[in-house]
Amino acid sequence: MFDEYDFSLGEIGGTGQRKAFRTRIPGLEISLKATGESFVVLDLSATGLAFRKPRNDFRKDTRLEFDLLLNKKLFIPGLKADIMRVCADGLVGLGFADNDRRQEARLDKLVLEVQKRMIALRKKAGKQGT
Image (cartoon, rainbow, N blue to C red; front, top):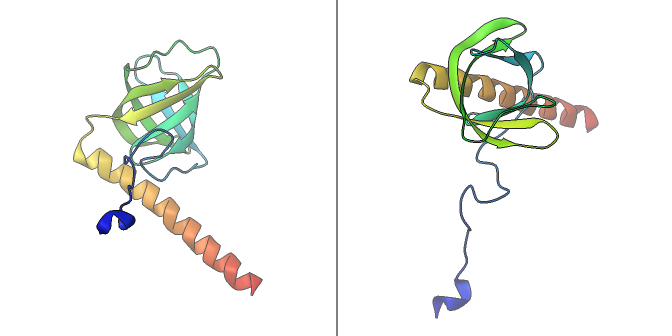
């Protein structure tokens, strides 16, 4: 009897699905602890980030430690992330790993602030359009 109502939501976080809201934040960079190299963050979420390094030698499943900089100022020191993917075009995708509660809270707050601003801008644009 209930067969006609059966459905599946699929696997959460399955192939091709994002696990968290991602956004680009102008002025956001990472500075690698091991080399001191800095890279512009292309997108950020509460679960990870992406950057690009042409001709990179990064390998998947490698752990990186880095500082997160906002407008060249230290924002969150000593973050850790695992390399989740390395693309031929130099894109490197990281997943945050083993960070403390304070670091995670700062990341969450940063992403939430961006979401709030985006919502406010959409509301403002909607009011101006009507």
